Length: 184
Image 1 (cartoon, rainbow, N blue to C red):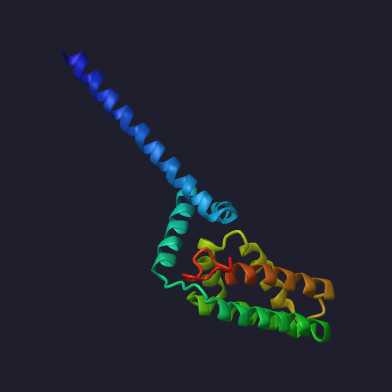
Image 2 (image 1 turned 60 degrees about the vertical axis):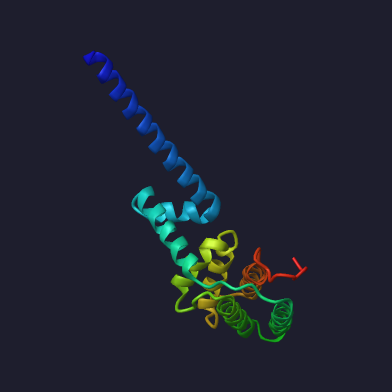
């Protein structure tokens, strides 16, 4: 009788441990799918996987509290025209065009409902829905920070424009486009 009770308790404990392990794996997989390359970047930057996953969940909770808005077609068209203008300025003044591209991306973020209080927070907020293009934003921002110095070539400035465009286009389109809007 005693061995039967011990066996049952042991089996229950083993099943509970397996259930906890499966739950943890499912949560990890969801975070990996949601954040893509940002998951790996965050794990590498933190002291432990647990700390990284907590950070990513906090980002997601903050993002869920934001009022991210889809853009109506007319507003998206206006932004597309604004972007075309920024690209045209590149020919005459590449340094200034890169700064304009940065400002336009920031304004678009704000219009969509993302807070724009600082670059680090922008990256954290964008990582939830735009993780796949976030590296573009990082590279472009890095180049933009060096604009005006002698260490930025025209090719680097062109590269910044390409990277800003990737982030811009990702922000401009949305899986949550306005209802009745057939442009996707």
